[in-house]
Image (cartoon, rainbow, N blue to C red; front, side, top):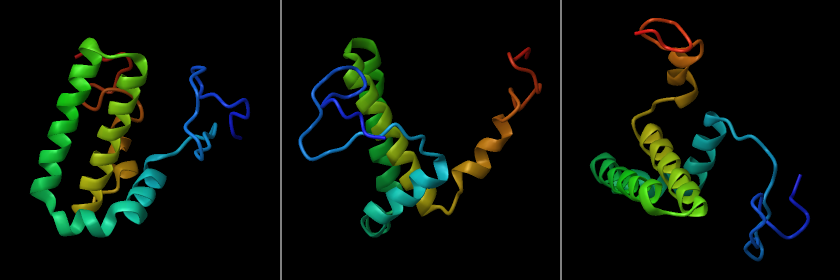
Amino acid sequence: MPWGDGTDRYGGARQPGRLRYRAIVDLRELQEVIERTYGELDRDRGVAPTVAWLTEELGELAQAVRKGTRAEIEHEFSDVLAWVASLANQVDVDLTEVIERYRDGCPKCGDAPCSC
């Protein structure tokens, strides 16, 4: 469902022409959207430059966490997730499958919270 009141979930003005939905996007859906949107460009760019872009985005996230606003932090998290999905698509990794090792807690000791 769209937010409907013209604001994002934090009360800020929504960008014109963009709807915000209260929907959960799973990792497989994220990879599919990234593939449809950027797949050809990503493959043309290649894996090594994608890793470089991901690294840059991680640096921007670190800076936002240290000194940024909530909106800047969220923006950088979304960029990092998009670049992780892009890289996973390029190396044929299904993020939904690989995250399964964390389903029940720590993949090493099996506990939640971790007792390692």
